[in-house]
Amino acid sequence: MISNEQLLGFLKKNVICVSALGIAVVFGVTVYLRSDIGPEEESILSQRSTEGARLEANIENSAQLKEQFAAITASNAAIQARMIHVGQLAENLRYFYKLESDTGTKLGELREVTPAVAGKNAPKTTYTPVGFAVTVLGEYPALIDFLRRLESGVHYVRVNQCSLTPVDAAIRGGPLTMSLNIELLGMP
Image (cartoon, rainbow, N blue to C red):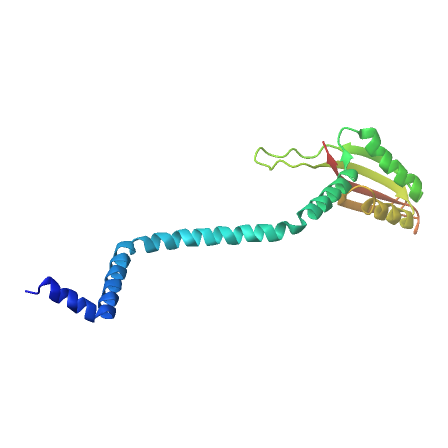
């Protein structure tokens, strides 16, 4: 057996070795006791890193958010201004009468047609297409001008069907009849 004095003497002679051994033992015990915490902490670190990257991207992308919102609001207002209103039949028909007077054509028939009813599973939309059946009489250049003004006019228009037929088949180059089936985009 070793006495206390001998042990104390050995420790005084080998201070560096004993200190290093003590530190190694404390380090080993610490690693052993905390080894189960590693994977858990790594998953938390991964989650927080992902969240941090997302927040950083949000901050970076929100730099021009006010300007983008203002631009979208202005575009939406411009779109709203081009819409017809479903219940205002007189105002909607006035648009076609103005085209008639501007192009020098004659409206033969102008009536609003009921759009097909969407099924129960159809998605709800903000805008509603309003159908019109239009028959226009005139010379070929005037009819083409009418059609161009209609397509590039104030309202959003979709031409579903267009047909040109001569008023009198015996007269070459005479007046024509243009029958249109169109939809104007409108709001309820």
